[in-house]
Image (cartoon, rainbow, N blue to C red; front, top):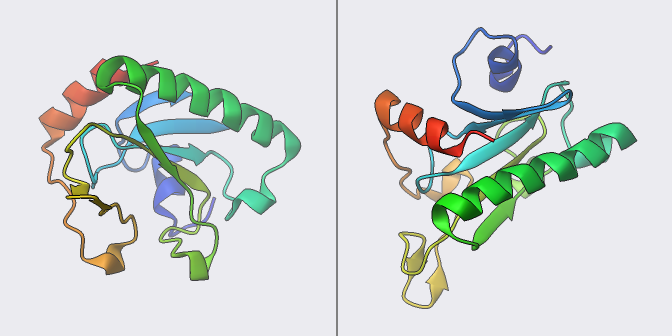
Amino acid sequence: MMDKCIFCKIIAGEIPAHKIYESKHFIAMLDVNPVIAGHVIIVTKRHTKTIHTLNPEECKELGVAMHAVSKKLEKKFGSHLTMSNSSGEWASQSVNHFHIHMIPRTKNDRLWNEDQSRIVLDKSSGFERLNMTIEELEKMADELKV
């Protein structure tokens, strides 16, 4: 565990999270600063920085985790989904702990501006994230538990 890593603190139980999935190597939780309702982050339990540093067992399990979470998101929001991973500083990785964003998409959601996607995950973009209450996050987590 890295002392200052927020994801390591969540995994260690030092910071609460709205978990919807857990396996040997991964947890999936609601993003506390979502770009849209249902925004989920899948995080490795082991502190590792990028997809390049996952071991073969973690790679296999990641696919299973992504599939399980995507099926739950599909049931709640429909079949459209944006998945994003930024690996490394120049890719705008904001937390140096491997994670994948899974964002349910609907027609005319707030991430579209006419015919142009406005989806931006890095904080430097200035894109305003949702401000969900603890109660809203808890309700969403209950609805999305795998």
